[in-house]
Length: 319
Image (cartoon, rainbow, N blue to C red):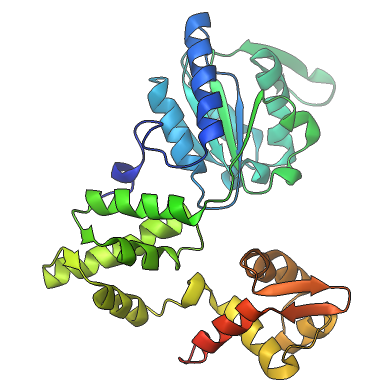
């Protein structure tokens, strides 16, 4: 079963992001009435929240061909020009991680987004000239996890700005239940709720987690799995409580072992766990703060009662 088979085919199947779906439904309806392509779109949000799935869905709902490009691969103008010059009317270009495109590529997009024209510079030095090419009427969708890295002039040329919201546990349970049906699995509500606690409230991680469960069900030839069976699966796969990764586990255990419930400064913590300051603040701490395992105080980082409880669970196993 491919990932594509699990992508939502309608807005009803796309769980969560209700306001965005309403706004998109309106925009698509308006574009059809105007007989024009959908205006350009930026989709911003954390990894795994469904940006690519939303782009696929927009293409399906507008009955448009979707061309997928990856920002890190667009490092010279020709990387983008080759795609733009082969488009047809009403097609969609999706640039994933658009913040990673080279500056020169971004500058090419300015007239493309503003006037639907591609400005090509021909020749060198004093013999250069600019050729303006009219492009087919198309829609550009840019997806980014780091919207703040996009230049203002580029960002402002997108009419629609959609910022994906974090998912709630109930929505993750709904995603798990829907995916479970596609795998022909039978899982009780308490099993689904248990699985949800390991997903970090992230749709992609929820789907990936259920793939592991599905693989197990295939091997044992059993579709109705009990809670103890699922617990054994996750234990064998080394899943940590709350879906914590190794960096986060090391961070929590180190604070607890060396500082207990006393506050610790960021610089001292960086030296102890041997991680750069930016790795701590941008990679390790966000999820711990979000889950209430950690507090930032004027005196430093402090473990909460929830943090101490999760540490007690972690100490039951060697990580």
